[in-house]
Length: 187
Image (cartoon, rainbow, N blue to C red):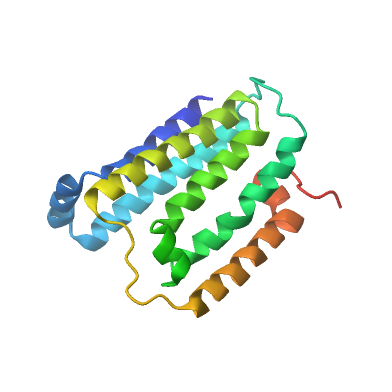
Protein backbone atom coordinates (compact mmCIF):
# COMPACT_ATOMS: atom_id res chain seq x y z
CA UNK A 1 0.00 0.00 0.00
CA UNK A 2 3.04 2.25 0.52
CA UNK A 3 3.76 2.44 -3.22
CA UNK A 4 0.16 3.36 -3.95
CA UNK A 5 0.14 6.17 -1.37
CA UNK A 6 3.56 7.43 -2.51
CA UNK A 7 2.47 7.39 -6.13
CA UNK A 8 -0.73 9.27 -5.37
CA UNK A 9 1.22 11.84 -3.35
CA UNK A 10 3.75 12.42 -6.15
CA UNK A 11 1.15 12.47 -8.93
CA UNK A 12 -1.16 14.88 -7.14
CA UNK A 13 1.68 17.07 -5.86
CA UNK A 14 2.75 17.68 -9.46
CA UNK A 15 -0.81 18.35 -10.59
CA UNK A 16 -1.66 20.48 -7.55
CA UNK A 17 1.41 22.65 -8.16
CA UNK A 18 -0.24 23.92 -11.34
CA UNK A 19 -2.99 25.46 -9.20
CA UNK A 20 -0.44 27.89 -7.77
CA UNK A 21 -0.25 30.04 -10.87
CA UNK A 22 2.37 32.48 -9.54
CA UNK A 23 4.79 29.78 -8.41
CA UNK A 24 4.20 27.88 -11.64
CA UNK A 25 4.90 31.00 -13.72
CA UNK A 26 8.14 31.62 -11.80
CA UNK A 27 9.30 28.05 -12.37
CA UNK A 28 8.43 28.25 -16.08
CA UNK A 29 10.38 31.50 -16.30
CA UNK A 30 13.36 30.00 -14.48
CA UNK A 31 13.46 26.70 -16.41
CA UNK A 32 11.80 27.60 -19.71
CA UNK A 33 8.53 26.21 -21.06
CA UNK A 34 9.84 22.96 -22.55
CA UNK A 35 12.06 21.98 -19.59
CA UNK A 36 9.16 22.74 -17.23
CA UNK A 37 6.81 20.55 -19.26
CA UNK A 38 9.44 17.83 -19.36
CA UNK A 39 9.94 17.96 -15.58
CA UNK A 40 6.18 18.03 -14.98
CA UNK A 41 5.73 15.05 -17.30
CA UNK A 42 8.51 13.04 -15.68
CA UNK A 43 7.26 13.66 -12.14
CA UNK A 44 3.67 12.87 -13.19
CA UNK A 45 4.78 9.72 -14.99
CA UNK A 46 6.82 8.58 -11.97
CA UNK A 47 3.78 9.08 -9.74
CA UNK A 48 1.51 7.30 -12.20
CA UNK A 49 3.86 4.31 -12.47
CA UNK A 50 4.00 4.06 -8.67
CA UNK A 51 0.19 4.28 -8.52
CA UNK A 52 -0.20 1.45 -11.03
CA UNK A 53 2.42 -0.73 -9.34
CA UNK A 54 1.13 0.08 -5.87
CA UNK A 55 -2.49 -0.60 -6.74
CA UNK A 56 -1.56 -3.88 -8.41
CA UNK A 57 0.45 -5.02 -5.39
CA UNK A 58 -1.88 -3.69 -2.71
CA UNK A 59 -3.71 -6.25 -0.59
CA UNK A 60 -7.46 -6.28 -1.14
CA UNK A 61 -8.72 -5.39 2.32
CA UNK A 62 -12.52 -5.35 2.17
CA UNK A 63 -14.20 -2.25 3.59
CA UNK A 64 -17.70 -2.77 2.20
CA UNK A 65 -19.45 -5.16 -0.14
CA UNK A 66 -20.98 -3.35 -3.11
CA UNK A 67 -24.40 -4.74 -4.03
CA UNK A 68 -24.54 -6.39 -7.48
CA UNK A 69 -26.75 -3.66 -8.99
CA UNK A 70 -23.90 -1.17 -8.55
CA UNK A 71 -22.18 -2.81 -11.51
CA UNK A 72 -25.01 -1.68 -13.79
CA UNK A 73 -24.96 1.81 -12.31
CA UNK A 74 -21.21 1.98 -12.91
CA UNK A 75 -21.68 0.96 -16.54
CA UNK A 76 -24.26 3.74 -16.92
CA UNK A 77 -22.01 6.34 -15.25
CA UNK A 78 -19.12 5.35 -17.51
CA UNK A 79 -21.09 6.01 -20.72
CA UNK A 80 -20.39 9.76 -20.83
CA UNK A 81 -16.81 9.55 -19.53
CA UNK A 82 -15.08 8.94 -22.85
CA UNK A 83 -17.37 11.33 -24.70
CA UNK A 84 -16.36 14.01 -22.19
CA UNK A 85 -12.67 13.12 -22.55
CA UNK A 86 -12.79 13.45 -26.32
CA UNK A 87 -14.88 16.64 -26.14
CA UNK A 88 -12.21 18.24 -23.95
CA UNK A 89 -10.11 18.54 -27.10
CA UNK A 90 -12.86 19.63 -29.52
CA UNK A 91 -14.59 23.03 -29.57
CA UNK A 92 -18.16 21.77 -29.64
CA UNK A 93 -21.31 22.44 -27.64
CA UNK A 94 -20.40 19.74 -25.09
CA UNK A 95 -17.19 21.54 -24.17
CA UNK A 96 -18.95 24.91 -24.18
CA UNK A 97 -21.72 23.65 -21.89
CA UNK A 98 -19.65 21.52 -19.49
CA UNK A 99 -16.74 24.03 -19.39
CA UNK A 100 -14.32 21.46 -17.94
CA UNK A 101 -15.12 18.14 -19.60
CA UNK A 102 -11.80 16.56 -18.61
CA UNK A 103 -12.42 17.15 -14.91
CA UNK A 104 -16.05 16.06 -15.23
CA UNK A 105 -14.87 12.84 -16.90
CA UNK A 106 -12.30 12.26 -14.16
CA UNK A 107 -14.81 12.77 -11.35
CA UNK A 108 -17.42 10.58 -13.04
CA UNK A 109 -14.85 7.82 -13.68
CA UNK A 110 -13.69 7.91 -10.06
CA UNK A 111 -17.21 7.92 -8.61
CA UNK A 112 -18.32 5.09 -10.91
CA UNK A 113 -15.40 2.96 -9.79
CA UNK A 114 -15.97 3.74 -6.11
CA UNK A 115 -19.46 2.26 -6.49
CA UNK A 116 -18.17 -1.20 -7.44
CA UNK A 117 -14.88 -1.44 -5.57
CA UNK A 118 -15.23 -1.85 -1.83
CA UNK A 119 -11.62 -2.61 -0.92
CA UNK A 120 -9.27 -0.17 0.81
CA UNK A 121 -6.80 0.19 -2.08
CA UNK A 122 -9.62 1.00 -4.51
CA UNK A 123 -11.14 3.48 -2.11
CA UNK A 124 -7.75 5.21 -1.77
CA UNK A 125 -7.16 5.27 -5.53
CA UNK A 126 -10.59 6.31 -6.77
CA UNK A 127 -11.36 8.45 -3.72
CA UNK A 128 -8.12 10.40 -4.21
CA UNK A 129 -8.92 11.04 -7.87
CA UNK A 130 -12.47 12.11 -7.03
CA UNK A 131 -11.30 14.45 -4.26
CA UNK A 132 -8.58 15.93 -6.45
CA UNK A 133 -11.07 16.45 -9.28
CA UNK A 134 -13.37 18.39 -6.97
CA UNK A 135 -10.51 20.50 -5.57
CA UNK A 136 -9.10 21.20 -9.04
CA UNK A 137 -12.51 22.18 -10.41
CA UNK A 138 -12.91 24.69 -7.57
CA UNK A 139 -9.41 26.05 -8.29
CA UNK A 140 -10.13 26.32 -12.02
CA UNK A 141 -13.42 28.12 -11.41
CA UNK A 142 -11.81 30.55 -8.95
CA UNK A 143 -9.00 31.31 -11.38
CA UNK A 144 -11.35 31.83 -14.31
CA UNK A 145 -9.46 29.29 -16.44
CA UNK A 146 -12.57 27.39 -17.51
CA UNK A 147 -12.77 26.43 -21.17
CA UNK A 148 -14.33 29.06 -23.38
CA UNK A 149 -15.60 28.04 -26.79
CA UNK A 150 -16.30 31.05 -28.99
CA UNK A 151 -18.27 29.33 -31.75
CA UNK A 152 -19.06 25.70 -30.90
CA UNK A 153 -19.79 23.39 -33.81
CA UNK A 154 -22.18 20.44 -33.70
CA UNK A 155 -19.82 18.45 -35.92
CA UNK A 156 -17.30 18.34 -33.07
CA UNK A 157 -19.98 17.01 -30.73
CA UNK A 158 -20.82 14.26 -33.21
CA UNK A 159 -17.14 13.32 -33.44
CA UNK A 160 -16.83 13.33 -29.63
CA UNK A 161 -19.89 11.10 -29.21
CA UNK A 162 -18.88 8.62 -31.93
CA UNK A 163 -15.25 8.32 -30.80
CA UNK A 164 -16.15 8.39 -27.10
CA UNK A 165 -18.77 5.65 -27.39
CA UNK A 166 -16.40 3.65 -29.59
CA UNK A 167 -13.72 3.80 -26.90
CA UNK A 168 -16.32 2.87 -24.28
CA UNK A 169 -17.37 -0.17 -26.33
CA UNK A 170 -13.75 -1.27 -26.83
CA UNK A 171 -12.96 -0.97 -23.14
CA UNK A 172 -16.14 -2.77 -22.05
CA UNK A 173 -15.81 -5.63 -24.52
CA UNK A 174 -12.05 -6.10 -24.84
CA UNK A 175 -9.63 -3.76 -23.11
CA UNK A 176 -10.68 -3.48 -19.46
CA UNK A 177 -9.25 -6.90 -18.68
CA UNK A 178 -5.86 -5.75 -20.01
CA UNK A 179 -6.01 -2.34 -18.36
CA UNK A 180 -7.31 -3.40 -14.95
CA UNK A 181 -7.12 -7.19 -14.93
CA UNK A 182 -10.89 -7.45 -14.53
CA UNK A 183 -13.18 -8.43 -17.42
CA UNK A 184 -16.42 -6.46 -17.69
CA UNK A 185 -18.16 -8.71 -20.17
CA UNK A 186 -17.60 -12.46 -19.88
CA UNK A 187 -16.41 -13.93 -23.15
